[in-house]
Image (tube, rainbow, N blue to C red; front, side, top):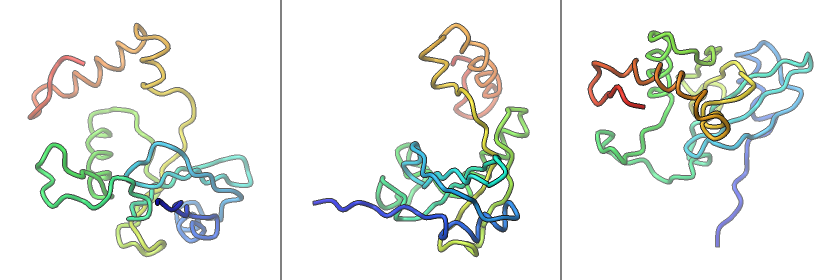
Length: 156
Protein backbone atom coordinates (compact mmCIF):
# COMPACT_ATOMS: atom_id res chain seq x y z
CA UNK A 1 0.00 0.00 0.00
CA UNK A 2 1.41 3.37 -0.98
CA UNK A 3 0.74 6.51 0.94
CA UNK A 4 0.21 9.95 -0.56
CA UNK A 5 3.20 12.22 -0.30
CA UNK A 6 2.75 15.55 1.37
CA UNK A 7 3.81 18.44 -0.83
CA UNK A 8 5.25 21.66 0.49
CA UNK A 9 2.88 24.45 1.40
CA UNK A 10 3.00 28.23 1.09
CA UNK A 11 4.17 28.41 4.71
CA UNK A 12 6.90 25.81 4.07
CA UNK A 13 8.23 27.75 1.07
CA UNK A 14 7.85 31.23 2.61
CA UNK A 15 11.45 31.52 3.97
CA UNK A 16 12.95 30.44 0.63
CA UNK A 17 10.68 32.81 -1.34
CA UNK A 18 11.40 35.70 1.01
CA UNK A 19 15.14 35.24 0.48
CA UNK A 20 14.88 34.78 -3.29
CA UNK A 21 12.10 37.23 -4.13
CA UNK A 22 11.90 39.59 -1.18
CA UNK A 23 8.35 38.54 -0.34
CA UNK A 24 6.17 35.60 0.62
CA UNK A 25 4.10 34.10 -2.20
CA UNK A 26 0.35 34.65 -2.23
CA UNK A 27 -0.10 31.09 -3.52
CA UNK A 28 1.98 27.99 -4.23
CA UNK A 29 1.19 25.31 -6.80
CA UNK A 30 3.09 22.05 -7.21
CA UNK A 31 3.80 21.43 -10.89
CA UNK A 32 4.27 18.15 -12.72
CA UNK A 33 7.56 17.07 -14.20
CA UNK A 34 9.90 17.02 -11.24
CA UNK A 35 10.19 13.28 -10.66
CA UNK A 36 13.48 13.66 -8.75
CA UNK A 37 12.67 17.05 -7.24
CA UNK A 38 9.66 19.10 -6.29
CA UNK A 39 8.72 21.87 -8.70
CA UNK A 40 6.59 24.69 -7.32
CA UNK A 41 5.19 27.87 -8.85
CA UNK A 42 5.44 30.71 -6.36
CA UNK A 43 2.71 33.22 -7.30
CA UNK A 44 3.18 36.72 -5.93
CA UNK A 45 0.40 39.21 -5.18
CA UNK A 46 1.62 41.53 -7.98
CA UNK A 47 0.93 38.97 -10.75
CA UNK A 48 4.56 37.85 -11.07
CA UNK A 49 5.76 34.35 -10.30
CA UNK A 50 8.88 32.24 -9.95
CA UNK A 51 9.67 28.54 -9.91
CA UNK A 52 11.19 26.75 -6.92
CA UNK A 53 13.03 23.44 -7.34
CA UNK A 54 13.38 21.41 -4.15
CA UNK A 55 15.65 18.36 -3.87
CA UNK A 56 14.50 16.23 -0.93
CA UNK A 57 13.81 12.53 -0.41
CA UNK A 58 10.08 13.28 -0.01
CA UNK A 59 10.01 14.85 -3.48
CA UNK A 60 12.04 12.10 -5.18
CA UNK A 61 9.83 9.50 -6.88
CA UNK A 62 12.84 7.52 -8.13
CA UNK A 63 13.98 6.32 -4.73
CA UNK A 64 17.46 6.28 -3.19
CA UNK A 65 20.34 7.72 -5.18
CA UNK A 66 22.92 5.41 -6.75
CA UNK A 67 26.45 5.80 -5.47
CA UNK A 68 28.16 5.86 -8.89
CA UNK A 69 27.00 8.84 -10.98
CA UNK A 70 29.20 7.64 -13.88
CA UNK A 71 26.60 4.91 -14.50
CA UNK A 72 24.37 6.19 -17.35
CA UNK A 73 21.30 5.02 -15.42
CA UNK A 74 22.45 6.53 -12.15
CA UNK A 75 20.42 8.97 -10.16
CA UNK A 76 21.91 12.11 -11.75
CA UNK A 77 20.10 14.84 -9.89
CA UNK A 78 20.68 17.48 -7.29
CA UNK A 79 21.40 21.15 -6.85
CA UNK A 80 25.08 20.81 -7.80
CA UNK A 81 24.31 19.15 -11.13
CA UNK A 82 21.50 21.65 -11.75
CA UNK A 83 23.84 24.61 -11.17
CA UNK A 84 26.54 23.08 -13.39
CA UNK A 85 24.06 22.46 -16.22
CA UNK A 86 22.58 25.95 -15.82
CA UNK A 87 26.05 27.53 -15.99
CA UNK A 88 27.04 25.47 -19.05
CA UNK A 89 23.85 26.23 -20.98
CA UNK A 90 24.19 29.93 -20.14
CA UNK A 91 27.82 29.91 -21.35
CA UNK A 92 26.66 28.35 -24.62
CA UNK A 93 24.10 31.09 -25.11
CA UNK A 94 21.12 28.79 -24.64
CA UNK A 95 18.20 30.75 -23.18
CA UNK A 96 17.60 29.32 -19.73
CA UNK A 97 15.44 30.61 -16.89
CA UNK A 98 17.45 33.16 -14.91
CA UNK A 99 18.69 31.79 -11.59
CA UNK A 100 17.35 34.03 -8.82
CA UNK A 101 18.67 32.14 -5.80
CA UNK A 102 20.35 28.84 -4.90
CA UNK A 103 20.18 27.57 -1.33
CA UNK A 104 23.41 25.58 -1.36
CA UNK A 105 23.45 25.25 2.43
CA UNK A 106 19.82 24.12 2.86
CA UNK A 107 19.33 27.13 5.10
CA UNK A 108 15.76 28.04 4.12
CA UNK A 109 14.33 24.52 3.78
CA UNK A 110 15.52 21.22 5.19
CA UNK A 111 16.80 20.42 1.67
CA UNK A 112 18.64 22.03 -1.21
CA UNK A 113 16.61 24.38 -3.39
CA UNK A 114 16.82 26.84 -6.25
CA UNK A 115 14.49 29.58 -7.43
CA UNK A 116 14.40 30.57 -11.09
CA UNK A 117 12.36 32.94 -13.19
CA UNK A 118 9.03 31.56 -14.37
CA UNK A 119 9.15 31.44 -18.16
CA UNK A 120 5.67 30.74 -19.41
CA UNK A 121 4.67 29.65 -22.85
CA UNK A 122 5.52 26.72 -25.07
CA UNK A 123 8.40 24.34 -24.70
CA UNK A 124 10.38 22.06 -26.99
CA UNK A 125 8.41 18.97 -25.96
CA UNK A 126 5.12 20.58 -27.05
CA UNK A 127 6.70 22.00 -30.22
CA UNK A 128 8.00 18.56 -31.22
CA UNK A 129 4.43 17.20 -31.05
CA UNK A 130 2.60 20.17 -32.56
CA UNK A 131 5.04 21.35 -35.25
CA UNK A 132 8.05 19.06 -35.80
CA UNK A 133 9.27 21.25 -38.66
CA UNK A 134 9.50 24.33 -36.45
CA UNK A 135 11.28 22.24 -33.81
CA UNK A 136 14.21 21.65 -36.19
CA UNK A 137 15.77 25.05 -35.48
CA UNK A 138 16.06 24.74 -31.67
CA UNK A 139 17.08 21.09 -32.01
CA UNK A 140 19.85 22.00 -34.46
CA UNK A 141 21.02 24.78 -32.13
CA UNK A 142 21.20 22.39 -29.20
CA UNK A 143 22.90 19.71 -31.31
CA UNK A 144 25.44 22.23 -32.60
CA UNK A 145 26.34 23.13 -29.04
CA UNK A 146 27.20 19.48 -28.39
CA UNK A 147 29.89 19.29 -31.10
CA UNK A 148 33.34 18.71 -29.72
CA UNK A 149 32.07 17.65 -26.30
CA UNK A 150 32.47 14.09 -25.03
CA UNK A 151 29.35 12.16 -25.95
CA UNK A 152 28.06 15.04 -28.09
CA UNK A 153 26.74 14.58 -31.59
CA UNK A 154 25.71 16.85 -34.41
CA UNK A 155 22.43 14.96 -34.89
CA UNK A 156 19.34 15.90 -32.90
